[in-house]
Length: 253
Length: 359
Image (tube, rainbow over all chains, first blue to last red; front, side):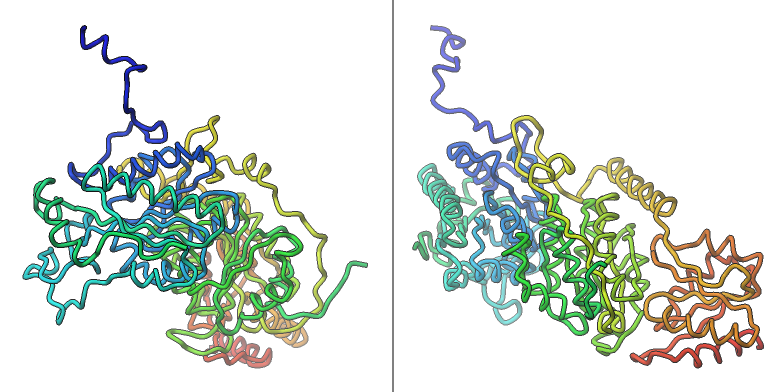
């Protein structure tokens, strides 16, 4: 049997979701963004909600998320995505509205907007990519940067006396009565990615049920910012990030 | 006879919003404009027209809620006062850059900083010259009565959607707080989602299979694309200057001197004109209704018949610069202003005017 005989649509066990565009992603090889984008696209496809979903992209590496997921998008000012999502969902209660935000966007400059959107219990989905660094601007310290971690603005390592402690914002979000589902996941293995996909799907389903805000943190790698190979970055994340940001549900009701 | 109700300028804004088919109001309390959101919450329009009213956590958030709502092609608005507008400037720049229509009301108080809660007109530069970053303009309407507070809501939305650009009502604490008779205009229904899809094919209404995705963004990293975007915006602002300059001339036909004043100061200067006329001085009043686009051409037209012009403002002289640009050195352009919430009397303005022409 020739290879050409094998590569036929009916023999495929896996294909790219049609909700993902064919645009080549600008993300660095090894970055978690691409995987999370794929999972979101697959959830939208499986739920059949491509026409009903509006995404809000952040400022940061994922600013161009709209180039990769084939839905309507609004590109927000830095940190303000939850405000856009609030208005969009309230004016279009029948739509699925999600924000996609990094740690600088959500946990630093946008702290007020995320806390209040979650506290109001907006029926939106929040995807929070926590890679403990500012990727797009060249690897500066993020609110979630670990103690001792070296970045462009903490070149001698994050010192709590100088920079404060890592902000576990997801733990704070879980305390808010407006949130119905708060979980922390990762995508470094196929098994982890499957769990994250289930979490994202549940979040979108909650949105339709009007249960409140669903918040999915994805503990992620930024191997370029961390100056590690993709494989080493995954190992480093498991060893160092997971103890600070443990994987699992913080709230599910 | 249409229904007339005695109300504050701020209350007129709220009633107009409900009655002109506004989809959403997002705001944060600040003196002297809190009656806008208070009236809306009291009226509960979500029960009648379906209009959304939400108290946001900050002005930063309310302006970004406008960005979200406007992206959906909805008629959305906010109101605030000077310090709140400073917080909104980032959002206004994004709204202008993403070419989104919305209405922002600024009931101006005295600044800078926390300033005073008394009336002021010191936000002219912020409203007309940018405020936020980058090359952008807003349509700026200056009401001088409670009726205009009401009417400019609908007009503001009309112009905002005509140009896909933020529009601002630049009021002041006097116009916001004073009570006058206001005629309520007939109810206009809110646009249906079908109408929005037809009118605003660019809006994020959900990507259907018959069209490409809609993306609302102000980001353009390609230099040529970004330059083109800026030129598109400039063309739009030029069109505003060609088609939508609004002003009122009072006794300007035979005038030898003209006072330029807007908002509450134009009301006071109307009395000053009467005083001057009684003394045989041919004084007229030009009241810009749109501060951007500014009635530059009208001033240019008037210059040959005039001996002087005078800008009267509750500021240290901001509109003055636009008057001077229009006059372009051909006439003396004088200025009179009070600050700190002190609103001058017509007599005080008249004395200042006489001093200015006799110096």
